[in-house]
Image (cartoon, rainbow, N blue to C red; front, side, top):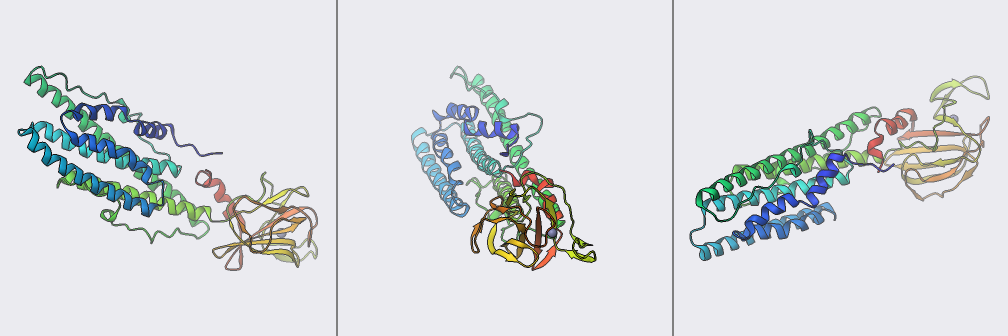
Length: 382
Ligand SMILES: [Zn+2]
């Protein structure tokens, strides 16, 4: 089942991709301020930067931001020469608008990355930036009415800045919560995702503050960078999970006829150690890889009959008593690939799959691994 992001997020991302409200706000100022035009022209391309490899995208993004700032400076000085006495209020609005454009880009990039990672973002009680109606600057009727509309415009901008900030926070919270779910789920099998490669210093991230020397814009970039760190952590946690043999090796659920550990041996009647779990299934049922990796054994092994072993990062899975083997040693397998068929070869009293998980060549109970596919299923799909 493909993973669907919440309708909140989809609606929000749709809004960001077609931000009519923001663009119409911008359009009002285009005539009086060319800065806006530049921000608008460059913003739509930013989202595409992050579809490439992250490192390259960060660099491209930084370059883009640098180019934007240089262009802003250039236009700024030209504007002073041409217009002479530029309306101070309009200048402030333009600055705030630049801030909003920047924030909007940050949110869009991060929201798209979150959506790509299948994260569900809760944006609160149905409040999205789409609800805001842009204020009109009106015709140049009189000074007082202009002042009023500038004030209204200012408050629209303020509100949009606030809502963007909330969206940013919601993305960060969703990522942190999901990472927490995975980390605590993996604790059951003694595995901890390795976050050591992440640069946790938020100011070292890809988002740079706009050149305004103001505390707000610096903290905006800090926030965006810390949200990016949260998303990277989630990405690592999720791929750690996905590399583990946690997928059920038979498509339909089957009861366990014999569990892991000491049991009465069906052949000798004495107590013996059972190194895996047995799933009875009809002869010829497809057997799937519980995790990806390299095939390290495919043939007959004493007791196991026809057996396949797959290894990934020190964790091995074994599939025994097969009636058919569909892979070769050295082959790279993805989780869920069909690798063979259920049989009754070797020490077997009837058709069943013997499934085994080995960590550093010591058999481990496979049940906690397979349980993870239920408890953390939302992070395995899609
Ligand atoms: Zn068995």
